[in-house]
Image (cartoon, rainbow, N blue to C red; front, side):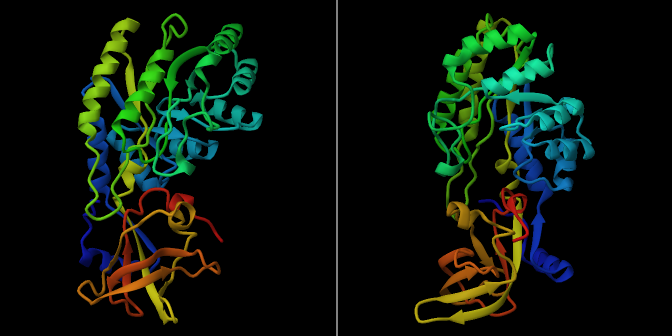
Amino acid sequence: MDVRLNRELLLEAARSFGTPLFVYDQDLILERYREVLTFTPWPKVKILYAMKANYNPEILRLLQNAGAGIDAVSTAEAILALKCGFSAEQILFTANNLTEREMRLAYALGVLFNLDEIATLRRFGEIFPESDLCLRFNPEVVAGENAKVQTGGEFSKFGLLSEQISEVREVTARHGLRVVGLHIHTGSGIKEKSKFLLALDNLLKVADRATFPDLRFIDCGGGLAVPYRPGEERVDYPVLGKEIAARFAAFCNRYGRDLDLLFEPGKYLTAEAGSLLVQVVTVKRTRRKTFAGTDSGFPHLIRPVLYGAYHHIVNLSNPDGDLQSYDVCGNICESGDLFASDRLLPEIRPGDILQIQNAGAYCYSMGGLY
């Protein structure tokens, strides 16, 4: 966990703009971007920011200026990325269960499709023959911090299977489709380096030049983990990066030319850089609990109620108060609307400003109007 914004700055932001308020550290976002860019010592590494993590236009422009591309999962995301300065050539369109209308709209935008299902591939070929595209394969590995965000393995809805190669070859040949990239995404918050490497190995086994002679890139997807709890160690991704580079170099030697190596970090770039500031409205004591009621709720930060996710909380107004146990709750009429349960925090008083940390990914972007 790496939170650079200091207490005084955050309190001033709350006073100036009101709460609830999301605050982002742009310098930290750029630092994380440069880390991913240099983790793997390969001369042709490219970063596609998974904008589903946080589509704030200022963050998009920041990363566009830094040289990133975009991983978009909807036509709306692709349109927003274009409006924020990305070119169509910088966007990989990895939507799931596409309608024909969405397909035609995205194709008109000029973005590169990343398809993961035979029926969709057939439809694409029938409507847009002689087109370039990318194919997403199931990595055949189960990994990720929560079962709901594990996107590989035999129970996942995502990705082509290796045994479907003959069907892929038949469809692409019939419609003159050129497969220029192969892609996997194994899950979110992957801490096991061995699983990341196994997923890559499985993809590289599929990437035979006889089947895919037009490849320009291999896309490892995202899923890099960030620490959420105090004292939680960071994954040593530079060590992983060296292993990835060695495997990829051997693959490119077999393939006959050096390809681009793509990563799609979302959470890793923005999670630690974001804070949600909330104000305590009430402190309510019952027979068994003390509730610190805030002016926010799960429409702003849904991860705790959706995934049981942990977010560290700091009492900015009273950091040195005596520790007490609180349920920090929101203002929504559901009992699950909790940011934390039985959390030891410095004494919380009405009017205090709380900082909910690691709120830069899958918080605002998963928000709603409930």
